[in-house]
Length: 387
Image (cartoon, rainbow, N blue to C red; front, side, top):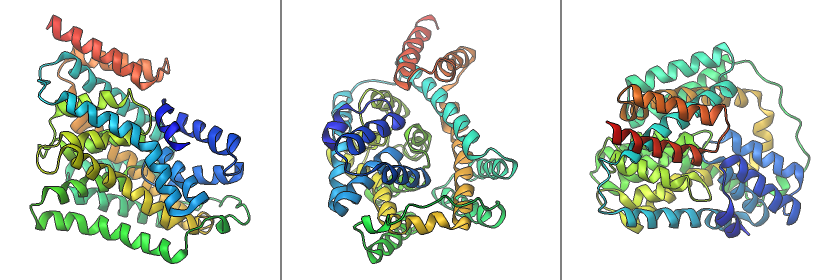
């Protein structure tokens, strides 16, 4: 079932949730409507790829950890394999001068700008949360290190916990905890491992010169700190892999364009990046390393949260802290929209014009991202001819 979904689920996270509902609730009846709604709500709160997490959570609810692992492999494997094959096909190709590639970079500006706008409207709609978002953007622009993102998220959570108003907790369905076959002891262990890796990996990275540890740290941190999933991950991954020289900007944008054409989660873009990385590991080994690293936080967070989800949602202080964290993510994404996304793509008025076209297609005409990417690639190729 999950492999079939991985082969046919085009359209992004919202479409994926529709496919899951049809498969798991309507046809298979693995979970009921209330359980599915609760799992979707949980995955919207957690960082990481929301649609993939819903699939993993359904698998865990039905068959424990092995069920979650099987659900993840089935949904993720097809797009990951396709992107790794694309990486091998692309090897040795000269990309730097391609006009279509510059069009892909411009499409990324439009896609990320739309993500910032939609997230700001839902996650920072009032003055306190908008202030948190702006402060996070300023810090992220001024202090561009691996540690800064973690500290901004932690600080925003504390500010939200102490300052934001307490929202009324939602009504909880009865008996939900009993349907989660994960012990609380294992859940606490998952939280310890998650925070241990999040704090220890950057330290270990600086103490060693091991490229595999550095890559695992970068992709794990992105998977742990990206709220909203989907295209939100693009600028944060670009900031992690392009400046160190692991992947050229041309390679990055070529892979991003390919990721629009395959089914399944956009987070499997990590498999492509691992395959084309300069250094060791790369190829299939690098793809496995980066894919495991970017999805590992999702597993740990779901393992740690599912047995306590009802209790978490009933705590108004925790909900306020999550609101602060979500607002900070908007600011971090706003900073990433400027650098590296805007600064690497926009070189003149013609590029701005093509960006406006792409934004219009996304926000006014509601075209899917893959169509916008195609139009931008053609536009970039046309601009290269006339320049």
